[in-house]
Image (cartoon, rainbow, N blue to C red):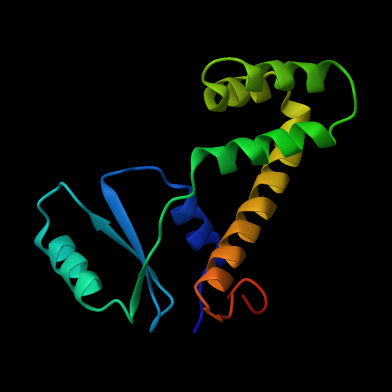
Length: 145
């Protein structure tokens, strides 16, 4: 089975409470179910997923502490200096996620490094999720998951 690890990572990170996410173990597809939009197709998929737990695995979004830890680890890897201090302050303030994002706007030289770090960590989260659910899959972007 092929699983798009980046798509699974995005599903793990998505905190939208109006969307349920499942991994279809037959196709490797991440299936989205829109909970409150009254879409009949969505309701049918949700019912099928609930009635067929051997085929569909519910994807519980990761908690915000994991996302915070990913940002925190990135900051810890930075050399001492003004950029690191700014990002440390952003994480210490109320609303650390939006503050971190805003601080990165002031540090365009770190944006690429942040996205590389973030994407690698999210891929690792997705691979861990697959292992936790005893799912062996091929990742179309390269290798076994």
